[in-house]
Length: 306
Image (cartoon, rainbow, N blue to C red; front, side, top):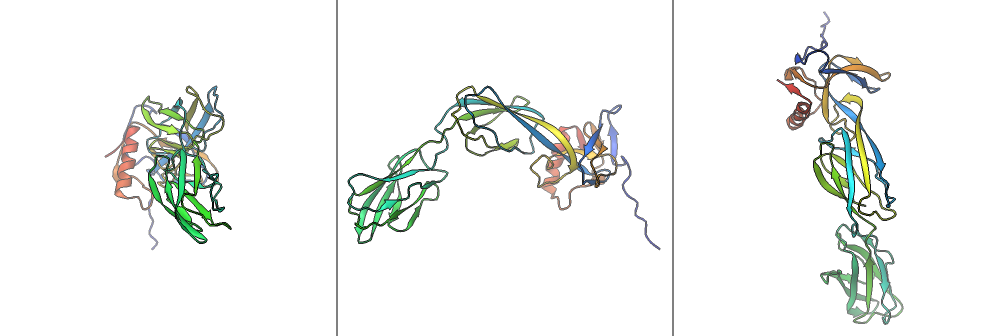
Protein backbone atom coordinates (compact mmCIF):
# COMPACT_ATOMS: atom_id res chain seq x y z
CA UNK A 1 0.00 0.00 0.00
CA UNK A 2 1.38 3.37 -1.01
CA UNK A 3 1.56 5.92 1.79
CA UNK A 4 -0.22 9.19 1.19
CA UNK A 5 1.56 12.21 2.62
CA UNK A 6 -0.71 15.12 3.31
CA UNK A 7 0.81 18.46 2.35
CA UNK A 8 0.62 21.72 4.25
CA UNK A 9 -2.79 23.32 4.15
CA UNK A 10 -3.62 26.92 3.43
CA UNK A 11 -3.10 29.06 6.52
CA UNK A 12 -2.88 26.11 8.92
CA UNK A 13 0.19 27.61 10.62
CA UNK A 14 -1.72 30.75 11.62
CA UNK A 15 -2.81 31.25 15.23
CA UNK A 16 -4.25 34.74 14.83
CA UNK A 17 -4.51 37.50 12.25
CA UNK A 18 -5.49 41.15 12.45
CA UNK A 19 -9.03 42.20 11.55
CA UNK A 20 -10.04 42.18 7.92
CA UNK A 21 -7.25 41.75 5.39
CA UNK A 22 -4.64 43.78 7.27
CA UNK A 23 -2.27 40.86 7.83
CA UNK A 24 -2.21 39.44 4.31
CA UNK A 25 -1.21 41.04 1.01
CA UNK A 26 -1.62 39.70 -2.49
CA UNK A 27 2.01 39.87 -3.62
CA UNK A 28 4.07 39.00 -6.67
CA UNK A 29 5.86 35.67 -6.28
CA UNK A 30 9.01 35.56 -8.39
CA UNK A 31 9.12 33.27 -11.40
CA UNK A 32 10.84 30.01 -10.53
CA UNK A 33 9.59 29.83 -6.93
CA UNK A 34 7.59 26.85 -5.62
CA UNK A 35 6.36 27.77 -2.16
CA UNK A 36 4.49 25.84 0.51
CA UNK A 37 2.10 27.29 3.04
CA UNK A 38 4.08 28.37 6.09
CA UNK A 39 7.34 28.95 4.19
CA UNK A 40 9.39 31.88 5.46
CA UNK A 41 9.89 34.41 2.68
CA UNK A 42 12.22 37.22 1.77
CA UNK A 43 11.47 39.97 -0.70
CA UNK A 44 13.90 41.23 -3.28
CA UNK A 45 14.53 44.91 -2.80
CA UNK A 46 14.99 47.54 -5.48
CA UNK A 47 17.28 50.53 -5.06
CA UNK A 48 16.54 53.61 -7.14
CA UNK A 49 19.47 56.03 -7.00
CA UNK A 50 19.32 59.72 -7.79
CA UNK A 51 21.85 62.54 -7.61
CA UNK A 52 21.01 66.02 -6.43
CA UNK A 53 22.03 69.17 -8.30
CA UNK A 54 25.66 68.26 -7.71
CA UNK A 55 28.96 69.86 -8.63
CA UNK A 56 30.68 66.48 -8.33
CA UNK A 57 29.97 64.05 -11.15
CA UNK A 58 30.67 60.78 -9.34
CA UNK A 59 27.97 58.15 -9.13
CA UNK A 60 26.75 55.39 -6.80
CA UNK A 61 27.43 51.81 -7.91
CA UNK A 62 25.37 48.68 -7.31
CA UNK A 63 23.55 48.57 -3.97
CA UNK A 64 23.40 45.50 -1.72
CA UNK A 65 21.17 45.09 1.30
CA UNK A 66 21.78 44.03 4.89
CA UNK A 67 19.30 42.68 7.47
CA UNK A 68 18.42 46.18 8.72
CA UNK A 69 17.64 47.64 5.27
CA UNK A 70 14.59 49.89 5.52
CA UNK A 71 11.94 50.71 2.97
CA UNK A 72 11.97 54.36 2.05
CA UNK A 73 14.58 56.94 1.11
CA UNK A 74 18.17 57.03 2.34
CA UNK A 75 19.69 60.52 2.24
CA UNK A 76 23.41 60.98 1.45
CA UNK A 77 24.87 64.47 1.95
CA UNK A 78 28.45 65.58 1.25
CA UNK A 79 29.80 67.06 4.46
CA UNK A 80 33.46 67.44 3.48
CA UNK A 81 35.95 66.97 0.68
CA UNK A 82 39.30 65.07 0.52
CA UNK A 83 41.78 63.91 1.23
CA UNK A 84 40.34 60.46 1.11
CA UNK A 85 41.47 57.29 -0.56
CA UNK A 86 45.07 57.42 -1.80
CA UNK A 87 45.58 57.18 -5.53
CA UNK A 88 48.28 55.20 -7.34
CA UNK A 89 51.75 56.47 -6.47
CA UNK A 90 54.22 58.08 -8.87
CA UNK A 91 57.82 56.91 -8.56
CA UNK A 92 60.78 59.05 -9.69
CA UNK A 93 64.54 59.27 -9.29
CA UNK A 94 65.92 62.41 -7.66
CA UNK A 95 68.21 64.61 -9.74
CA UNK A 96 71.86 64.11 -8.85
CA UNK A 97 71.83 60.34 -8.29
CA UNK A 98 75.01 58.53 -9.27
CA UNK A 99 73.28 55.24 -10.00
CA UNK A 100 71.07 55.29 -13.06
CA UNK A 101 68.67 52.51 -12.11
CA UNK A 102 64.95 53.18 -12.05
CA UNK A 103 61.96 52.62 -9.79
CA UNK A 104 58.47 51.44 -10.71
CA UNK A 105 56.81 54.43 -12.36
CA UNK A 106 53.33 53.72 -10.97
CA UNK A 107 53.64 51.74 -7.74
CA UNK A 108 50.43 50.19 -6.47
CA UNK A 109 49.08 51.44 -3.15
CA UNK A 110 47.56 49.51 -0.25
CA UNK A 111 44.81 50.36 2.21
CA UNK A 112 47.22 52.24 4.53
CA UNK A 113 49.02 54.24 1.86
CA UNK A 114 49.49 57.84 3.01
CA UNK A 115 49.02 60.93 0.93
CA UNK A 116 52.41 62.63 0.53
CA UNK A 117 55.97 61.75 -0.50
CA UNK A 118 57.68 58.48 0.38
CA UNK A 119 61.51 58.63 0.49
CA UNK A 120 63.57 55.63 -0.62
CA UNK A 121 67.29 56.17 0.17
CA UNK A 122 70.31 54.00 -0.64
CA UNK A 123 71.94 52.92 2.63
CA UNK A 124 74.03 49.98 1.46
CA UNK A 125 75.47 50.16 -2.08
CA UNK A 126 76.71 47.02 -3.84
CA UNK A 127 77.77 45.99 -7.32
CA UNK A 128 74.63 45.51 -9.40
CA UNK A 129 72.62 45.54 -6.17
CA UNK A 130 72.03 47.78 -3.17
CA UNK A 131 69.66 48.29 -0.26
CA UNK A 132 67.31 51.25 0.18
CA UNK A 133 65.54 52.40 3.33
CA UNK A 134 61.85 53.17 2.79
CA UNK A 135 60.23 55.97 4.80
CA UNK A 136 56.61 57.06 4.65
CA UNK A 137 55.54 60.74 4.42
CA UNK A 138 55.69 61.00 8.22
CA UNK A 139 59.28 59.76 8.36
CA UNK A 140 58.35 56.31 9.68
CA UNK A 141 60.68 53.60 8.38
CA UNK A 142 58.68 50.85 6.69
CA UNK A 143 61.52 48.53 5.76
CA UNK A 144 64.44 48.00 3.41
CA UNK A 145 64.10 47.43 -0.34
CA UNK A 146 66.69 45.40 -2.27
CA UNK A 147 67.58 46.35 -5.84
CA UNK A 148 66.06 43.87 -8.28
CA UNK A 149 63.51 42.48 -5.82
CA UNK A 150 59.92 43.53 -5.39
CA UNK A 151 59.32 45.49 -2.19
CA UNK A 152 55.89 45.38 -0.60
CA UNK A 153 54.74 46.63 2.77
CA UNK A 154 51.44 44.93 2.10
CA UNK A 155 49.38 47.89 3.26
CA UNK A 156 51.40 50.85 1.87
CA UNK A 157 53.28 50.41 -1.42
CA UNK A 158 54.52 47.77 -3.84
CA UNK A 159 57.43 48.64 -6.16
CA UNK A 160 60.75 47.43 -7.56
CA UNK A 161 64.06 49.29 -7.92
CA UNK A 162 65.80 48.13 -11.10
CA UNK A 163 69.59 48.08 -11.47
CA UNK A 164 71.17 50.32 -14.08
CA UNK A 165 74.52 50.40 -15.89
CA UNK A 166 75.97 52.58 -13.14
CA UNK A 167 75.75 51.30 -9.57
CA UNK A 168 73.99 53.26 -6.86
CA UNK A 169 75.99 54.97 -4.12
CA UNK A 170 74.99 55.83 -0.56
CA UNK A 171 72.58 58.74 -0.52
CA UNK A 172 71.06 58.10 -3.95
CA UNK A 173 67.33 58.22 -3.55
CA UNK A 174 63.91 58.01 -5.11
CA UNK A 175 60.56 59.46 -4.26
CA UNK A 176 57.11 57.98 -4.57
CA UNK A 177 54.44 60.64 -4.47
CA UNK A 178 50.98 59.52 -3.44
CA UNK A 179 48.28 62.04 -4.22
CA UNK A 180 44.83 62.04 -2.65
CA UNK A 181 42.21 60.68 -4.96
CA UNK A 182 39.48 63.24 -5.48
CA UNK A 183 37.32 62.36 -2.54
CA UNK A 184 34.68 63.39 -0.10
CA UNK A 185 32.71 62.26 2.93
CA UNK A 186 28.94 61.76 2.86
CA UNK A 187 26.65 61.52 5.86
CA UNK A 188 24.08 58.72 5.51
CA UNK A 189 20.60 59.01 7.02
CA UNK A 190 18.16 56.09 7.01
CA UNK A 191 14.46 56.48 6.14
CA UNK A 192 13.56 56.47 9.86
CA UNK A 193 15.92 59.41 10.46
CA UNK A 194 18.70 57.44 12.16
CA UNK A 195 22.25 58.47 11.28
CA UNK A 196 24.49 55.70 9.96
CA UNK A 197 28.27 55.64 9.57
CA UNK A 198 29.61 58.08 6.98
CA UNK A 199 30.57 57.04 3.44
CA UNK A 200 33.90 57.95 1.84
CA UNK A 201 34.15 58.45 -1.91
CA UNK A 202 36.09 55.64 -3.57
CA UNK A 203 35.85 53.30 -0.58
CA UNK A 204 33.38 50.43 -0.27
CA UNK A 205 30.57 51.29 2.15
CA UNK A 206 29.01 48.43 4.12
CA UNK A 207 26.84 48.21 7.20
CA UNK A 208 23.74 46.32 8.29
CA UNK A 209 21.59 48.53 6.04
CA UNK A 210 23.31 49.02 2.69
CA UNK A 211 26.44 48.35 0.71
CA UNK A 212 27.63 50.56 -2.17
CA UNK A 213 30.56 52.59 -3.48
CA UNK A 214 30.47 56.25 -4.50
CA UNK A 215 32.78 56.66 -7.49
CA UNK A 216 35.01 59.65 -8.04
CA UNK A 217 35.00 62.02 -11.02
CA UNK A 218 34.75 65.83 -10.83
CA UNK A 219 35.25 66.73 -7.17
CA UNK A 220 32.24 66.85 -4.90
CA UNK A 221 31.62 69.90 -2.77
CA UNK A 222 29.85 70.21 0.57
CA UNK A 223 26.11 70.04 -0.01
CA UNK A 224 26.22 67.63 -2.96
CA UNK A 225 23.78 64.80 -2.34
CA UNK A 226 22.30 61.49 -3.41
CA UNK A 227 19.18 59.56 -2.51
CA UNK A 228 18.67 55.81 -2.52
CA UNK A 229 14.99 54.85 -2.56
CA UNK A 230 14.42 51.28 -1.39
CA UNK A 231 11.21 49.53 -2.44
CA UNK A 232 9.88 45.98 -2.36
CA UNK A 233 10.09 43.79 -5.45
CA UNK A 234 9.17 40.12 -5.88
CA UNK A 235 8.80 37.62 -3.04
CA UNK A 236 11.05 34.56 -2.81
CA UNK A 237 11.76 31.71 -0.44
CA UNK A 238 14.13 33.02 2.23
CA UNK A 239 17.68 32.61 0.86
CA UNK A 240 20.28 33.35 3.50
CA UNK A 241 23.07 33.78 0.93
CA UNK A 242 21.32 36.53 -1.05
CA UNK A 243 22.39 40.18 -0.97
CA UNK A 244 19.38 41.64 -2.79
CA UNK A 245 16.92 41.45 0.10
CA UNK A 246 15.96 37.81 -0.32
CA UNK A 247 18.03 37.01 2.78
CA UNK A 248 15.85 39.18 5.04
CA UNK A 249 12.76 37.48 6.52
CA UNK A 250 9.77 39.70 5.77
CA UNK A 251 6.77 37.39 5.45
CA UNK A 252 5.31 33.89 5.33
CA UNK A 253 3.53 32.19 2.43
CA UNK A 254 -0.15 31.86 3.38
CA UNK A 255 -0.85 29.18 0.79
CA UNK A 256 1.01 26.82 -1.53
CA UNK A 257 2.15 28.72 -4.61
CA UNK A 258 3.76 27.14 -7.66
CA UNK A 259 5.36 29.92 -9.71
CA UNK A 260 7.94 27.70 -11.38
CA UNK A 261 6.56 28.54 -14.83
CA UNK A 262 5.96 32.27 -14.42
CA UNK A 263 5.58 34.95 -11.79
CA UNK A 264 2.19 34.95 -10.15
CA UNK A 265 0.22 36.62 -7.39
CA UNK A 266 0.18 34.81 -4.08
CA UNK A 267 -1.08 35.50 -0.57
CA UNK A 268 1.67 36.47 1.90
CA UNK A 269 1.37 37.13 5.63
CA UNK A 270 3.25 40.41 5.93
CA UNK A 271 2.20 42.01 9.24
CA UNK A 272 0.38 41.66 12.58
CA UNK A 273 0.02 37.90 12.93
CA UNK A 274 0.78 35.12 15.39
CA UNK A 275 1.97 31.86 13.85
CA UNK A 276 2.84 28.37 15.06
CA UNK A 277 6.64 28.13 15.03
CA UNK A 278 6.40 24.33 14.68
CA UNK A 279 4.64 24.63 11.33
CA UNK A 280 7.07 27.06 9.70
CA UNK A 281 9.29 25.96 6.79
CA UNK A 282 12.85 27.27 6.98
CA UNK A 283 15.60 27.19 4.35
CA UNK A 284 17.39 23.85 4.22
CA UNK A 285 20.42 23.92 6.50
CA UNK A 286 19.40 27.08 8.38
CA UNK A 287 21.17 27.19 11.75
CA UNK A 288 19.58 27.99 15.08
CA UNK A 289 21.30 31.39 15.02
CA UNK A 290 20.00 32.13 11.51
CA UNK A 291 16.48 31.15 12.52
CA UNK A 292 16.73 33.39 15.57
CA UNK A 293 17.83 36.32 13.40
CA UNK A 294 14.99 35.69 10.95
CA UNK A 295 12.54 35.51 13.86
CA UNK A 296 13.68 38.99 14.93
CA UNK A 297 13.25 40.24 11.36
CA UNK A 298 9.69 38.88 11.18
CA UNK A 299 8.88 40.48 14.53
CA UNK A 300 9.77 43.88 13.08
CA UNK A 301 6.73 43.44 10.82
CA UNK A 302 4.58 42.27 13.73
CA UNK A 303 4.76 38.59 12.75
CA UNK A 304 5.28 36.70 16.01
CA UNK A 305 6.32 33.04 16.19
CA UNK A 306 4.76 31.18 19.10
